[in-house]
Image 1 (cartoon, rainbow, N blue to C red):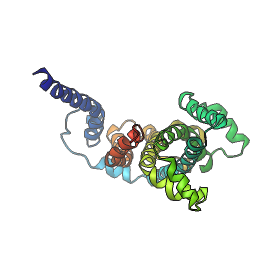
Image 2 (cartoon, rainbow, N blue to C red):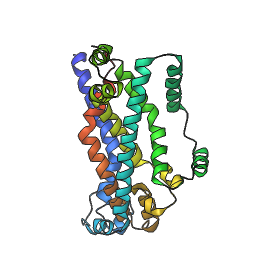
Image 3 (spheres, rainbow, N blue to C red):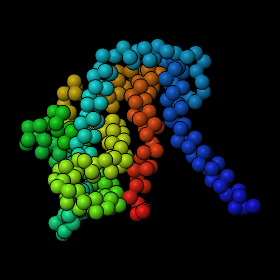
Image 4 (cartoon, rainbow, N blue to C red):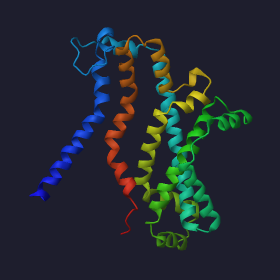
Length: 272
């Protein structure tokens, strides 16, 4: 009897924990439709009058489209750079081996542990005359997100048989063709996982653009939220509506592709 009840109890606990996590999202949603006085109470009750003017006020802002454009541009370019460089590095590290490459791999692992130091990063960007440019923020995110991506891809490539490489080389396939035509399609599941993690990380990050992007025309949508809150802090209904508009794209991407995250994280954990 106990064995039959335990899965039910676990499901109840899991649902309860999920509901606790969803409370902040529900609060943002219901308060985004409330007026200035009612939204200031930060309540969880439904609005007495559903205010759509909050969303009209948000969508009428000139900076919102520019913020979305900057965030989409940076996210897409960082995804491209991370997927390309991480898969190349993981392929070489896993296939070639050796003490030197193992040392490189351990350096990537240390990148997962050591926190990012923003002051030396700013100093380096100044020395390279890159501070405030799109290239500087793309390089910053690529460097920050490479360690996790390399770690994930190296673990998966251990499950890819070396016989495929040998057969391709014997058939006259060069290393670059081997990488692009054979290896990349095999690691596509993990690359989707990496892409989702990179998009969420870049989209939600505040400190990187805040310190490295000096031109307000290049601000991401998260920085636009910061500017928006300072302008409309007394009208929390408008602020919550802006937050909901900002998190909606990345939330939808995560919800539709979440199964690929699980598949990618577990891929290569068991050799078949």
